[in-house]
Image (cartoon, rainbow, N blue to C red):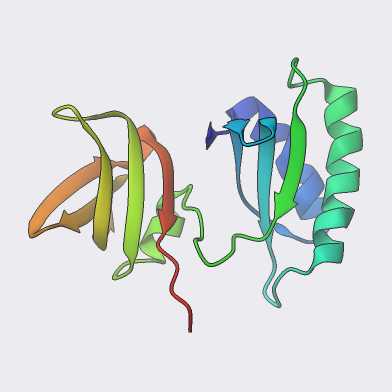
Length: 152
């Protein structure tokens, strides 16, 4: 799965915010059940199943009309969950000190996958410490990133 295109997000965001939710982000790509558009929503009091169903119904209708995605796909709407995905610089900044997994599109020196502690975020760059070495990762190059969830 990769971040959804800006065109898809531009269709999704007004629907989600219009319903009173925050669009955390969206991913599109091959999943276990075929091509999937995965949309993450949140609100201060948390997300319940009915929230996901409400947003899913509205998005399904709007996405059909807009016809932004030309191929067949499944629509999944969920909360960010314990392994919260990171899409924006603000998402990264809110998780400083946490363990993260990051996959880059282009990579650094042939390396695309990084798992370690997020130690800083500045000017579009997330710094992740992996085995005692700091790696500066361009957030614009992030293909997928999430917090490694911890049970309370």
